[in-house]
Length: 524
Ligand code: ADP
Image (tube, rainbow, N blue to C red; front, side, top):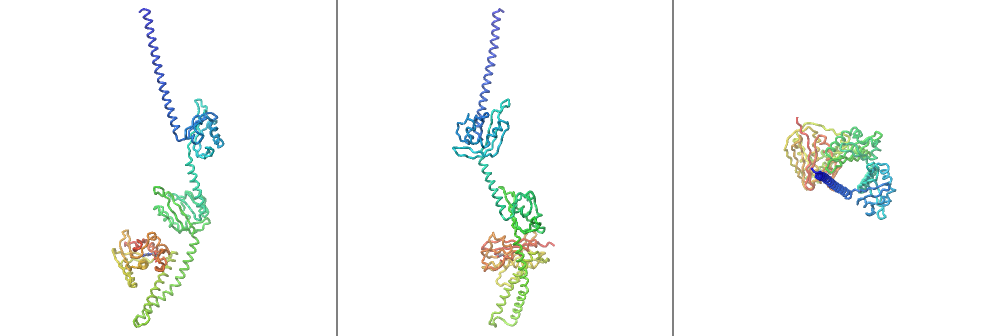
């Protein structure tokens, strides 16, 4: 190979090497260009996120807190227009400097500690007017690779509406507390498990306990030992069914004395109808109870004193009637003596019934109502009562049907008293009808039912539970037309409850009523 040829080869080799180097450089350049583009895109995306965010975002550079950028929401809050970039923060919003903002920024910038705040009130001067808003915000120190702090990143959220709502809730809670402390009632709130979560001052004053002693406790010990079982079982029953509790019981005060209270508890339900808690209001009725007791003692005394003379009047009236029927009849006698005597007998009968009811009432109140249990055929007993009733009242159109035959173990006279009361009411509250239907049938729950149906004035739905209460009479019924004291059904209810039976009414106003009671069937 000639020297020229070698030189040419050498030159070709170098040319190839250069070409490769150039290709490599071109590849690197396009890689850098791509990376640059990627970075630009990413930057654009970050900016997009920051500028489209509903959060308030700004970056404050250096110790003068120069606004490097600020998104639209934060500029709107500042209310100083769009030309804020490049200016120191406290030149743009000087009003916030004295509101602690500078201290918080300094803490982040000079100590390098992030600062977070919740619902912080800040007033901004917008067009000369100070507008108060609330913010959740974070000041985050921003560092370079050497750890040196260059500025503060600020992210904030305007939580004014939530803060105002919380303030409203706090205010209404304060008002509620003031209200329940002002009330004369003792108010307590327990959770769905019956454990205390709130009580008013009156409750604490009465029981002498502290709030902490009340919280988280279920306390049936505070009730009088004689009332404890009744309160606990009724409360559990109402808690289980989610129904209103309405009960009278004695509650122990801080001196260890028991005073009568009317206790009402109502369930609080969530959106899904689940009971979350119970509000209880206890009203002291000690004085009313003492007055009631005095009244009852007086009634008992008067009834006792009246019973003997009235019974003897009845005896003399009956004797006179018997003597008269033997010796004379009405046609020979110018005076309608017999008619008058019958009327007298009826009135005396009413008086005796009233006196007996009064006596029963006080016996019930003082837990002295004794029941004389015996086994007897119910159908026979009902038949006898119906016969007596038909004989004593000529106007009565009474139909009796027996769909079921059975024996019961009960107080015969008291059961008779309930049936007579139902029939008397059926007649009394049916001014335009004398039709009464009695039936005895199987109640299908181990109990036999006796129902008394009339076609009288009927009872509105809302009154149907009330009429079994002591002295309850439906207002609007003309008292003169329908004489009475509202004791009969109360006594009937007490008698049937003591027999473990049920008593209820089905009625429609203007169409009539059907009163029913049930008794356990005697299985042996
Ligand atoms: P009284 O009849 O003496 O008022 P009760 O305790 O027997 O007392 O009855 C309570 C109330 O129930 C009555 O005042 C009356 O308003 C209503 N009531 C009872 N029975 C009937 C009935 N069969 N029809 C309509 N209302 C009735």
